[in-house]
Length: 117
Image (tube, rainbow, N blue to C red; front, side):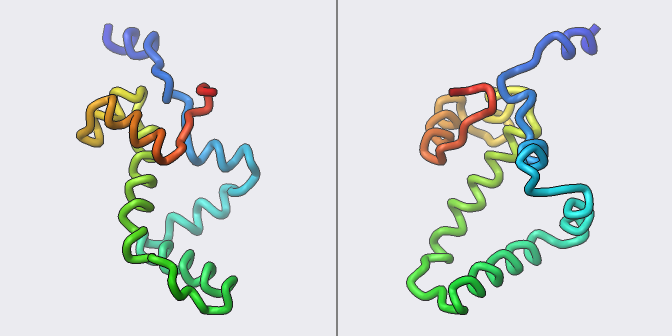
């Protein structure tokens, strides 16, 4: 009975997936996913920062990394919650927020679901 009910209800974020979005944009493939899954989160962040500093000739002065890391992590967790949950309400519950707080954060972070204009 519940399986039938679950199949009938699909919230706004049901089809939202960061991985699928990046695949459609041809920014990632299966090989990249395998390589990425073998790294820890700390290693991925360190590599990303190293690549960014290489682009700037190792001069990342006056860039507030320490103060920005909280906002970066929050945005990543919100994107994961939207990808992993059926609806915004489920994502808000997962994050321990009200739906209004989640919508406010989505607006601040400029995150839009695929089916929203």
